[in-house]
Length: 54
Image (cartoon, rainbow, N blue to C red; front, side, top):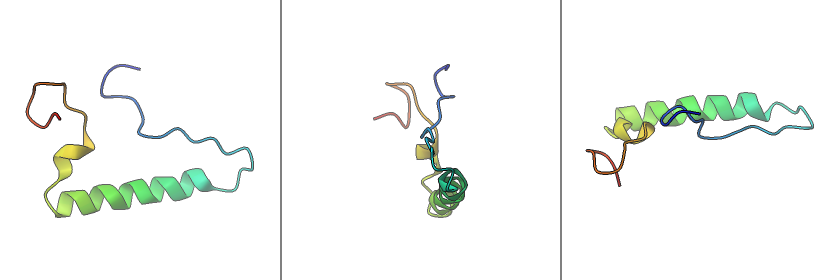
């Protein structure tokens, strides 16, 4: 996948027990928390050498 479009996690759920749905909710809650505390810039990748890059 192109840079910046890769998923943070890939779900492998052979038991079909719903972990993909739970992880999706956790991702949304985590993103909202980071936005509220002013760290939303870490939700997106930054090419090396640009602001926000490690």
